[in-house]
Image 1: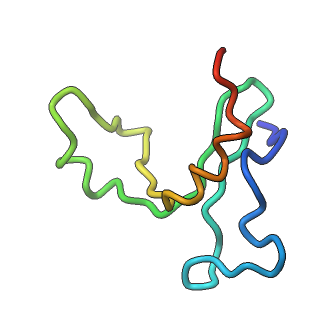
Image 2 (image 1 turned 30 degrees about the vertical axis):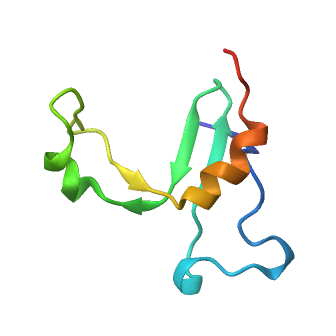
Length: 80
């Protein structure tokens, strides 16, 4: 698996501090076009998902700040 490019700005750009100054929420495009998301693991709340959604045993739910996704919007293509 190869991380090709960051989607959105570097969360530490210009000396910015991230939550608890430890790690950073981030979004990355993979070599096959899929996306990897770095965030806080909230898989423990999978039982609160609506009936039409689920989190399989090989999946994890992560939380990223709204700001991270909004700032990445310009890097996300409108079409496949």
